[in-house]
Length: 247
Image 1 (cartoon, rainbow, N blue to C red):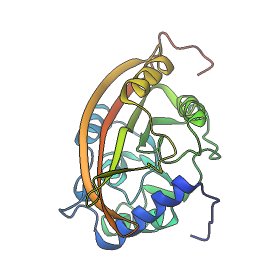
Image 2: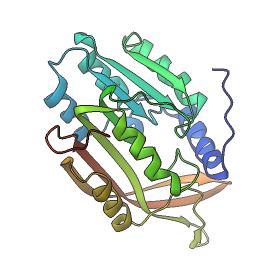
Image 3: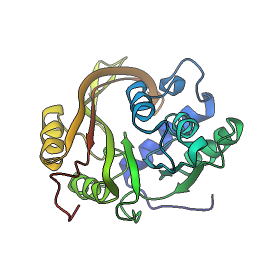
């Protein structure tokens, strides 16, 4: 893609993990979390946008298209578009390959961008997705709120934000039975993240708020690591009746 971004140590760790994953796993094949899209998100898009015209979707942290490609199949036939942003060039390269294979390349616009410097146009999108983007795509916890505010401003009135955030992260060296320091930029407690989102989305209509335990094993620096977390899924509607015009 020809774009090289300055990364934090946490973002470099994220790059290494995903490069390894994308090299050995194909999208929608069994065996990894790439096997299928987020079912509640796809169901929401079907329910809200299946018959709407010219729907504009923004997917921050799109990866290789796990969610973006199924969504493109839903909104594309009626003139919709899916703008996909990821700070990993390998992710966008694989995304466009997958979009071509699934015949939705004309619907998807893939861009290698730093989330924090990406200029989101105001009130431009019907749906903004930030799925595992808030904790991986920012340089510090202080910038999470700023990114969410940008997401909110980029959402049309009556539009939806769909957020998925990894919380309560624990990484354990399997052989040594020791805790490994997390290299995530943002590692919040579940209750802390939940409270933050509820405060930021005051005045919005909350659609979903769910806690899902998750674990997987992977290789890090040549050692087997057991990764555990509680995943927070949060979605909200920008209620045209009660939200300040500043958003």
